[in-house]
Every structure is written in C-alpha cells, then in structure tokens.
Length: 349
Image (cartoon, rainbow, N blue to C red):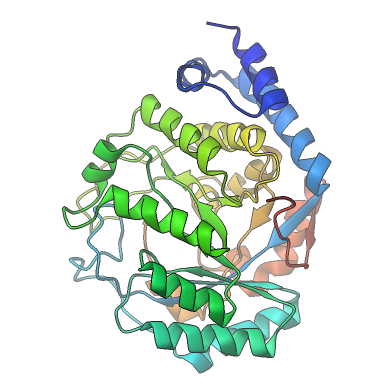
C-alpha cells in the first residue's frame, strides 16, 4: 500500500480513491497525518469558497416522529421525549427573525411527523418563498414518496437533507427498526436528485457497530452519488434510547473524515455540525479548519430547542441560538474566517 501522504496527495489531485485505500488511510491516521490532510482540505475549500462560512437558519418544527431509530431521542418509543409542533405562523416568525439577522437559507427540520401532510408542508414552503423570494428553503423531514418530493419542489423548496446514515445495508439494519429499509433510503436520495433538488446526505461517525470498512463504504458512496452537501457528525448517545450506554464518536475521527470529504468533493457544502460543537468546546471551529464551510445556528424558539433532544447535552443556548450570532461571527474571525449572509449555493453541479 502507498504511503498515507501520497494517498492524500492523490485524493487532492484526483478526488477519488479505492475502498481499500480509504481503509488504509483511516487505519493509519496520526496527528501528523491529520495536520497534513487539513492543510490540503483548507486550501481546496478556500480555492472555491475563499474564507466564507455560510450560515443556515435551522428551524426544528416538530419533535414527533413515527420512526423508531435506535439512536435517536425523538424515536416513537421514547415516552420521555418532549413533544411539540410549530405551526405555520411560528415558523414564519422564526424566518422573520432570521432574515433580519442576515440569514438567507432556512432549514425546516423535524421528525417524520404524519401530522405535517404534504399540503401543510407545501403551504409553508410557499409562504416562506413568497415572503422571502431571495432565500433558499431546505427541507429535512425524512423519507417520502417521489410524488411528495415533487410537490415540495414545485412549491419552491430548493434543497433537501437526508442523511443516508451508513452506506452498508447490514450496518443500517443494526441502527434502524425492521420496518425501515436501506434501499428505500437510497431510493429517496436518487429521487430527490433526479427531481432537481440540491441534495445533502451524510452519516454518523462512531455509531454502534461501525467499522473502518463502513466508513470507507461511506466515502465510496459519496464519490458515486456526488451530493451538493454532506452532513456528518459524531454519534452522541441519548440516554432514553437502546444505544444510551454506547460510546460516542470522537472529534478526532470526525475531523479526519471532514478532511477526506473535502478532498473527494471539492465543491461540496460541508457543515461543521452542532454535534461536533457539543462534544468539544472548539469543535465547530476545528471543523472549519478541517475543510468545512457551513454552520447552522438554531432559529427555533428556546422552548423548542430544549425539547428537540436527538442526543444528550445538545447545544441549545448561547452561541447556538440566533441571539449568539455575533459571538459565532467572532469565533469564526478568530480562526481567520468570516460569516457571510448570502444563500451560499453549491459552486458546481
């Protein structure tokens, strides 16, 4: 097998490796190799996006979910979860506040809540786009039919985020109940891309039963699918789930994967996630320095943020809230980057 640094150089130049080469890189990572990777991933992101960090206004509008994913605090079997729904006026109020602060992308995220029918979603999307035609609307509401996705797109939704969670069917089955199917998740992603959405996928780092081969499979899937956005973060246990006592993922491995993704997908929109900031006090800044170029402050009402606990100790106050945007700007400036307020579309595709 080649020297790890030679593999990083080839990934930087050709934007692809084999599964075996990804396994070798991940297995042989060291602090020195990580620094080598991050120097290249930063240079590549700055080639296409400069020092800009795009902000997305996250609106967590429902904590109800019909699914029973083993890792998620919103799973339907969790009787201790705080449940709430925001109505259309609530959502528009969040957008109003965000727009005044400079947000030009709103991300509507929630559990797979049957209460929010296609008609309710399309009506809300249309209302946001009518009020703010210069803004992008992103949906992150799970698996739907192609017809539903088409209706959302026709209403004006621009982007859709749906983590594939893992590109290994056997691993997927260990993280989800029997009524959820890996092939359907992948079908959804291809439907979304075919319809015309800017599509985001992603995976957890350090989830239960995950192997290095699983992570390599994730990289191979990203190379093939070529999403516009990739959201990854460390697995963080939630105490009321079957995985409540499992070990969480690490910032170190998450950052390494961020660097690899930037080299494999030079144009990708790559968030430095709340989860990364949750497990490390400077996690989000380190994510930017590893090649990420998006942060997603929370525009949800404070009471909702407290209840939307998909994992334990989730950041929901201070710099994570919209009121902390100035603080977040200062943190980005301290590492040489700047928050920008345009839509921040993917540079290619």
